[in-house]
Image (cartoon, rainbow, N blue to C red; front, side):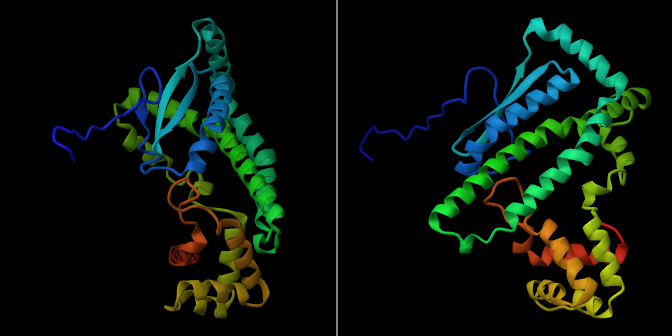
Length: 280
């Protein structure tokens, strides 16, 4: 470095106004893929959430700097506030989150799971270059649609809990951390409950050979493969369960994170606990 030279750090803000780094959801830098796919889909879904429930927030805007996520709150225009107040009253009085939950359980979730399974059933190694490009494009487009869908439905899980915390906190003076303990066990699906897991628990419990494999101290990956290879209900139930959860990310949201089948020890421990406790 020449005499008098300085090593200056230069930082351009994501945009005008106040921006906050989202270190809760994205504590590490995200891939370029995620930084390009996430913001528009998130904004669209969150905008529908706030409109549906009558919030005074229009949406959240995300932008990425060197992979780090920053967000800002975009309020609704003043002229729209009366409409939002009326909608908020309708939402609370009508408990519209129940309607949205029913819509999720009966329509969106089954349709999304079917789409996941269809994409997952494709063997990329069997595709030509052009077919692989088309397949990856389908995967990306589906992923973007799921980001949007996730945000659109988040209110059904968050708003009634927030309403509960606000009111009961005022009545009792207890902190949210203590009140949230009352929700433990209220949503089994949040702990991983599924018909596939229930089937797996029953199949392994009834099959001594499957129990021996599960309780063995060998290589976890080999143990999972042995469970898959078992004849009868145990093998079929294992395959169905792993097809459901095997590609779920275990740490974060980005495609660079590891999925369940890449961490067979964690997956095997989870199955052991579920079988021992007869639940997720």
